[in-house]
Structure formats: structure tokens, C-alpha cells
Image 1 (cartoon, rainbow, N blue to C red):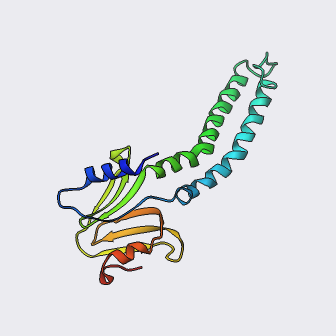
Image 2: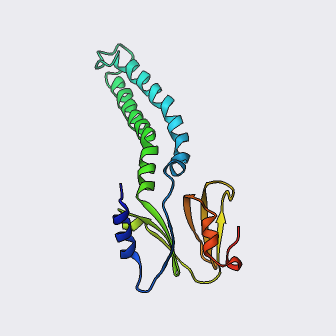
Image 3: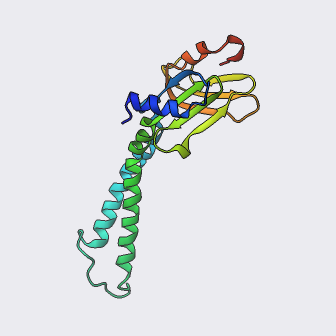
Amino acid sequence: MVSEMDFQKKLNDLLQPGERVLWTARPDGWYYTRPTFMLYIAAVPWVVFTFFWLRTFTGGFQWPGQTVYPYPNWMPWVAIWTGIILLISGLWMLSAPYWVWRTGKRAFYVLTDRRALVVDYLVAKKNQTLLLEGPISFRITDIEEAVSDIEVLCGKSQGLRWRAVRDPKQILTLTQPETSQL
């Protein structure tokens, strides 16, 4: 995916003059992808049902033959196209963990003395920035876990979420004790 040298080059391109990096991290692939596995689990019976659906309406995956009265000739084709649409959506759901994992592999999180960033290595439009003006606080979802989400809050702004960060307690040691909270 993204080499360490490419990562450093991208990071240097994003920094403003005089801006200093305090902390960087990349999401843990497994934990970043984990929420999509419920979609994957739901997709398995969906795809199996769709195969049975298509098999039934095509007569064993053969093109539909002539219909008998009272069914119109176009009726099997509607069922087949419905099955194809269901199959495509089921395959998309089965592949969702891969696409989320791929997005996580090209993301990185940066804390500087001026900003908090979520950077997508390939798609600059997906980058997120939080200006650090005012009191900064970090809200860690599961403080005792080895991998957790961190929410960066600053003043009255909305905040920024870093998902699936390894060793989340490390961020608390970088800031002054009076500006960080759990």
C-alpha cells in the first residue's frame, strides 16, 4: 500500500511553514474494518437466496422458456432482472469489508501544534482538518483497550474522530495534563 517514505513526503506537503508534528498514527486494519462485518454476515444469506431465486426463475440457470396462461411472456424477465440486481447488491455487501480496509490502509492521523488531521493518502477531498484554537481535549472510547477511537475536541468546534488507533493512551502523554481529559 503506502510506504513509509511516501507517507513522510505526503505529510511534509501538508504541513504549513513552521508547523510542528507532535504525533502521527495509522488505523489498525482489523479494528477499522470490524464494523462492516455485520453487513458481510447479512450478505451471505442474501446471496444464497438470490442464487436460488435466479435458479428458480431461469429453470436451472437456463433462459426462461415459454410461459403458460395466465402468465405474460415478460414476467420471467422481470424476475431475472430483479435477481441480477439483488445479486449485484449482495456481492457489493460481501466486498464492503475489503473496501473499508483499503480506505483504512491509506489513511493516517496527525496532531500538530496547530491542527488535528485525518488524511486520506490518495483522495485529498476526504482530508479532514480541525484547527486547534482554545482548550483541547481527547475523548478515548475505551481507555483500557489496546486499540480504540479518539475524539479530538477543541473549543466549541465539532471535533474530529480518529478511528482504530493503536495505543490511544499515548496521545494523552503528549499534551499538558490540564488540557487533556478522558
